[in-house]
Image 1 (tube, each protein chain N blue to C red):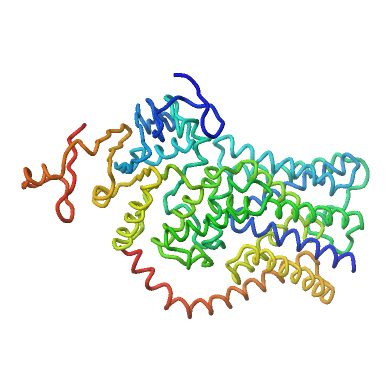
Image 2 (image 1 turned 90 degrees about the vertical axis):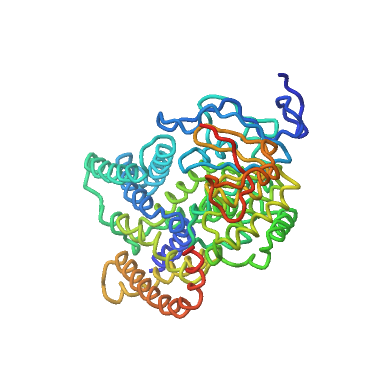
Length: 266
Length: 275
């Protein structure tokens, strides 16, 4: 393993060109309790990965490790060829919905611009470039008309779109979403997933959720996380084979024909 | 009297601007801790034979920074740290004054304010502190907004959130020092809370909230001064009572407004959240 010069001038590990994230034997403990155990994961540029698992299984911890907000006790994390802190510049983050004060006196426009703080620099106003990117991001999520509204006035689904726009303004190579549909109603969820399908063309997406049914239709890869990570490659089981073979009751209950069945693991 | 009015206006600028951050960040308890702690600095100033306001300045900034660092780096819960800070400063101030030789100074004016006897030097210090506060807030406006709204995202976006938080604590400390002579240590919390909280009723924009908050602070100061002069009441306490009365009135006013809007706008949202 040798260090080579990367496009941004920094020195990084020699990783395959389209590998966006690599976790090697990552362990995280909170007060002695394990949150992540020996996690190995590689995410590529074209991936649209859904991470599912029970609450408390470490899904949010996984995202925070990728973002460098949590340092693993053991193991190695590489993001875009460098440390997670450096990788942040090109990572868009959509945190869990519940974490803000609805009454906060801030407009949609202000919230989206916050994503540009790293680009804008301390002590300076936001530039025209920053504003242009913000406008473009709001157009992508179809929320430009709402730009002067106070953030608390919006519905759950609309707020979610604003937070996605905030993540998009850094023009990320990786988009991380934590329980994005937790308080969004069903019709809005379809629109949300279709937005992600469009975004998938330009960036890797990792979506963490406990909502299995909606996820399985849209994502390309699935990983199950309950302190330990099990990665199911999309080619593992084909939909046609399943539909032909299995007409019998399945453990997963969902609307319509389940498009995915995962091989059992422990 | 002219000094008193000037002091009131200078105080309104500081508490109007910083009070907004105190209110939106729910740091009211912190502001109480910092303001009571400043009494230690007053005592220190007397003990060292320097202007007590200057003693308060350095002591309060140091204490606020210390509290901020301790809460961030250790597992100590924030409100425990604030509680300790609160009483430590007061107790230290009392002891230091007691150790100072000579006649005991008029502590009453520091605890409860004495806006009518603010010396010119103190006005000068207040002006400098106001300029510092305005400059820092102007330069770091977008960073403070992000820190207040979503600190974790701010860290991800690339701003030095811990340092910014410590700077904000320093600004609160500076504002506390500006307010000591106006309403006194015991009541500073009122001016750091009420003007901003009242301004919040009338606008959704942070910038407008700051302007309104300064305006209300000025109204309270001038109105309270006039009333205390007319009724021969303690000036600091009258300013605070005026602000409380007007704030309660504004709550009643905005409740009337929002009740009309309640039926129209909240219903659809409630249906969504019931899913």
